[in-house]
Amino acid sequence: MMPSLTSAAFVLFPLGRKRYALPAARVSELARPDTPQTFPHTSKHVSGVLLRRGAILPVCDIAEIVAGKDVPPRKFYLIAMREIAGQRERTAIPVSGECELTNAELLPPTGKLPDYVRGLLSLRDEIIEVVDLEKLLAPEANA
Amino acid sequence: MTLARNSSRRLIVHGEAAILFAIGPQKFAIAASAVDRIHDLEGLESIPPHVHPRLAKVRYTFERESRRYYVVDANMLFRTLPSRHSRMMLLHPAKREQAGVALAVDGIDRMTSLPRIQSLPKAFHGDERSWYRGLAVVDGRVVPVVNPASVLNSAELMVLDSAVNARLALAGGRS
Image (cartoon, rainbow over all chains, first blue to last red; front, side, top):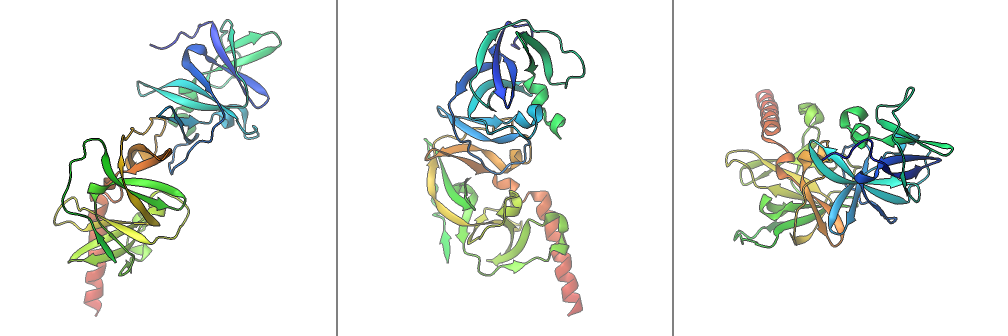
């Protein structure tokens, strides 16, 4: 079942100087620093795989898409559920630092925001974009 | 030097017998049942690139026991940086009358039993979906398991065979 877009719980994660969010229902864990393993492939934004408790998880680096090329090296991995062709798959997303769980109201996106922004969170003096992983990482969107 | 694979085939219940091989720093696995022989690179004949420019991954031919083999450069197949090949794996032909396919690699590591082959995560959506049958973990490292049918598929083999035969016929007519 797809998690509700208006879910009150979100995981906030830093990418460079900004923070972004995913619905908490999509996130299973924050993984410690690790080195992804690589092998030849042609899929854009997939930087390798992580071996986590016997399972092989793809590492999808979203930093360049959402925050540009100058994002410093990412240390941790957010393990999030992604839906691809009707199937759910755990994906490791490199993030710049510690994550935070918060409750907030999902506001509709305003202005000219990219398609992958599902909505916004207004937290004190910070507006945070809630990311739609499916739209962000769709192969056709990154062709 | 030729290393022949033992013809007696054992049923392996708890894993699949595989050959680990290297291309540059990367290890790969291929089902042992897909490999007929491992051979050095002696006796290769170059195929000029103009013979079939769209199949540039096929760099050489090789004749053995009246069968022509097309030798695929693993670097070109997997689009990796050039590396120093020292061996080729002669794959079992799909059809008895068909030309053979060989894969030139840097080295053969060893035979092993793959306890489990996991399917390639769906996040991988490019050519690797045909290159690999899946992924296995060997000594804590993730190793792609090569799909032998993707090295040179039947359609590519037919196209290449007719281009090479036409070239040979032309060369024969000139002499």
